[in-house]
Image (cartoon, rainbow, N blue to C red; front, side, top):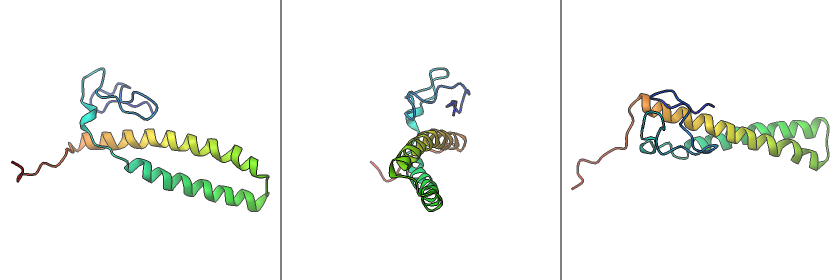
Length: 111
């Protein structure tokens, strides 16, 4: 959640809520060189969606609240879980790439 740089450990990994900084402001690590992609977002959509759907069905069957209560409960929960989880997942994946020295594949056949 702190968004620590994998090289120096300073909390400089993110520029915004879930947007990576182009480079670490403390040690200069080129964060833009890493390719995290959309994998964390797709995973979180399925995980958070499944969890919230199960909870909403349970609540509907147990209590049968009005529809607006579902909106008041689940919309903020989905937003918080997705943004918080996306930040953690993106940071974890970037740090895993850094530890394993993962880089873009380069074709030897290219001119």
